[in-house]
Length: 475
Image (spheres, rainbow, N blue to C red):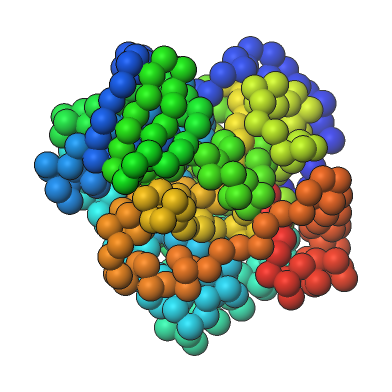
């Protein structure tokens, strides 16, 4: 909710008393045992570094393209333990962090990007069926909700713009009564329902299912095996790990928020910490008070926005709003928890759903998102085409990482495809400046975004300048 709508009631603090500081998704009893660490030397055709969605999709698709390809995957901890097991489970068709961002940056090819994104989400749904991925996949769609009158006007105007451009297929504008008929909150002023472009998943189960599928197809997976160094080795590459080494003809890097093994790429992303709460299961009467029969994923329209959705057992995940950039851009476990953010989120939750007063939160957690200056993934190669990378998904990677895996495999094969010809693939975002300029710029942008939310969406000179430069910062 917008800052002006924050709850003034202190009673909600008891709702956090029993919240465990761990990701709800990763506590699932179906969590698989980790694969053994690599010891000694390995050789392969393709080495995939990273056991999140990006790496797992790359390994799986490589085997589907050519079952004879010898694939090894190394993961520093356990598959899905980082962003892939901590996110909200919104699997969106958009490859560009939303249509508005894509239209602003690549207007000439937005139609093609939208088509490729829709095809990518269909392919994910097909993979869920083909590989029997038990990940609670639900093609519910998503609703962008307005919580201020000016946001309602903007949503209506945006939908009209999409209709004018022929990009509104599958979307429906909902006025106040219509959106509250879908999900009942006194804060909702309007909504824009994308009926087919978003699916809900259990994020950790998706990662674990992809891991099992990779193993069934013959991928050799080594967990608790961080990749330490990357260097050329003859006609291929060599990656050193704590207890061994992998020599490979080609390497795909799916490390995202963690420092890239290609050092020159490190300035293109920064970590931004995002936080979420999970409620206890709602009773039948509590569910009836909210409605939500169509189970869509929701996000509000403020710059500092919330995202929320239902789980299979009728819990509500509530996350977002604060986006915290640590000075120096380091990824550290100590940043995974932020009690002041949990308290703020709890207050906002009960402002949105006052009819749920008394509900308690069972889990509270955070994690790092890899953000780049254009908010959507970028791609490239290194070491004369023997290494490919994809990074910068900015929190919308559940679906887009599969597309990124296809791009990395195309680049490693030296293939010209509809994907590799995209401007989005061929061009990179601007890198972030060194400290202290990165921290100061991000802090000023965050302050300006909060100010815009509090002043009817009016963007100050700093934000307008960032818009003109194609830069910014997204919560």
